[in-house]
Structures are given as C-alpha cells and as structure tokens.
Length: 158
Image (cartoon, rainbow, N blue to C red):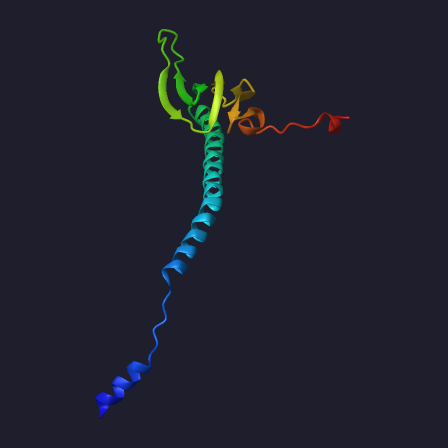
C-alpha cells in the first residue's frame, strides 16, 4: 500500500522544461548584449592601463630626483619613442661612458627624443617633456611634477 501511494504521488508531478526555440532566443539576446557591452569593457581596461602607466612614469620622475639628491650624483633620463633609459653620469672626467641603470618600455606613452638631466641637488632640466598619451599631444610640466614648484597664473601676480 505504501508503494502505491508513492507511485500516485510521482505520477501527479508535472515536468516543466524550456523548448529549444526558447533557449536559442535567450542565447541570441545574450550574444547581442555581449557584442554591445564587450568593446566598452575593453576600452575601459585600456584607459585604466594607460592611466596607470602615466602615474608610474610620474612617480619614476620623482624617484629619480630623490635618488639624485640622496646620492649626490647626476643622472640622465633619455626618452625616445616608447623607451625610457636611466643613466648614471660619472663625475670622473676620465670615465667617458655613462652607466645604464634601468630601461623601461612604454605602451601608451610616446616621447619625442629628449634627454632630462637630474642634478646632484635633485633638480631636473629641461622643465618640460613633450610626447603623446593615447594618441593625443602631451606636455608634462616637470617643474611641478618633480621640483614641487607650483606655477602661479599671471593674473594672481598683479
């Protein structure tokens, strides 16, 4: 008798399922949404990586300045294209070659060929760097980034 009750309960149970067409429609809608959202997510990731590289370069400019001041030595940073090389300038006049300390490859920053010199006091010259950042023109004011000097607009001076 117990077995009969169990069979009756199981036979009253209805199975609900999706048809193949319903599943295909849902998958098509998801695919369309992914094609719309996917490029936006990738673009956001590229922007974040470019910003991270810019901040890393800014910190590197400062660290070189601190290093020059702390060690009392002169450094040169050569920027060419997507490459940045840091050299230690020998104070010994007989040693002609500068020693390569570090070389970095850049992804989203591109610099015109230029050389920055960090004095033994930690100051950098020239005071600006030109290049491109994510295919847009870029001019970096090293006076405020590295030397810590804030430029005052001419209107405030009067």
